[in-house]
Image (cartoon, helix red, strand yellow):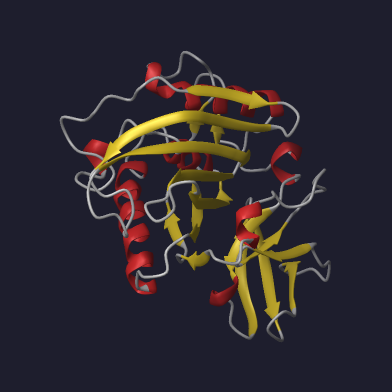
Length: 285
């Protein structure tokens, strides 16, 4: 198992904390096997350094999160235009630690086949287990992986949903450790609810997940919305922490895919093209 991050992993922006969770003063953090110090002296006055060093790392405050990098990203933060729509609620759903590769978490987020079996009577239910054919592509102009034309019957697609509906999905992997889901909005037929999952790799086989939602929902209680999303993720955590190997295999023959795994196949191919190995199992092990 590798214990150092390569350039492809270093040259990314990472969410390392949700802003509402950072206290005034100095706290510790970790990213890609490197210990960090986070110093907050005011609402917007936050700096990040490598622990034991005076070197200040670049930071951004966006989407309710604090972002930093240990490398030199070629672009700024991933764009999420919906975050700027004034009628959307921004739901910061807390931080969840998971003992697995950050790449495994992203891949799990892209998987519809597990809905009826892991999120029973919420995101799926028997006998509605078929993953219908959908479209995947690597969009070279923006260097992202997309899955479109996805649909799945869900007993409760969102907290505000009043009954089962055929839910439309789009998945977007904006960088190796950040993915975004666009799904049918029960309260606005012509718009999408947006759920972001920003993954912070602490070590190759240990990470933290930062889910943020941008919803068209004026009625649901904030605490209920957070608990609904956390319930779904905690159901996933049980599965994720029992997957073997903990690192994500990148060799095509390491795990046997099915038609439902088209997004996972595209994601793994994209990671190999980019040379991302942190949190991956490369070759036989």
